Length: 396
Image (cartoon, rainbow, N blue to C red; front, side, top):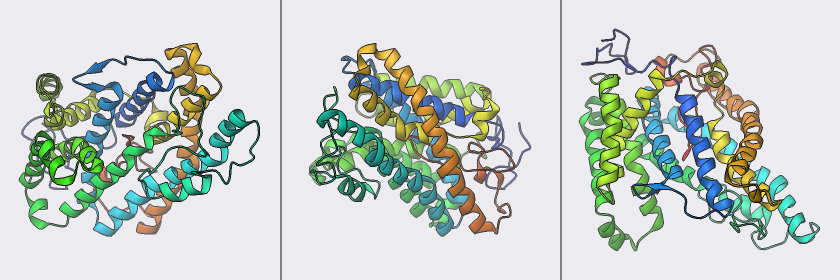
């Protein structure tokens, strides 16, 4: 058992195992692997390759997103429980929005013009076309993607009319942030682990009764997607809220992964969501036993990989790279995406978060529990906030 202080600062010992060490885990590496798994998943449709393998009715990318949301639920709840509401919201907006907006701008300034030139031979008509560059920026600036093409590009590719199909999940990620923000304002939720646990159970019940919910909401697609993803996020939140009592240990870690496998493969419709708490616990436990390179520990490029990979793959397809075959196509996309993700981290994400922390603390280290500055974005000195992709998505 561990004598380390818990994230909540109670100093409590868990019944078994240890609490997550915010300075000694491999969550950055795991999220990077999950982001690359989404890239590989997208190679099937973007290269025009049919019959992508599935497990329990979902693709490799779908399960990667589940892992992202589980990790995010843990870390974001830690952030909410360690910060006042205003600071929490500022951090969340700063972590997700600047890089997202720069990505949108890059699409209309770099990617789409190239695609338009290849399709039309010049840029004539690009600025005034339906779904124009400016329309794309304005319509999608609020995180919810209202359309994915820019001036009817990309064209002449296996997957038409979408420059960045990965960005859809960020809107639902942020909705989860707001749900945790609201729950964190209630004193009884903070005082006991049971309210968040009940919230997780209710989210699974909602998914199990999604047909009834669809009848009441006219099958609103936003509701469908949120009900699909929320249990994974709240599963991570539940693991966080019980961390002072249930530590990380290999026996429940392995058992959780096995339970997630059995539930998701044997219970249709909602088994995957019911396994959300097991997915979260298993993945977070893995971060304590898998080592990661120092450069990955100090530089969290997973968000950048997530938000640029799809566009890179589409640009490769514009030039016919899909004929290289699925794996060469994926490797080429990875080789181009990694530098873009590094630039996003070094030039946008990390500077913005340092500025936000400086605003809060007067350029001194914030007087909050250690795990609130989870180490996935920088080393102990910088304590930058990491990011979850997800479905990527950004985390505290």
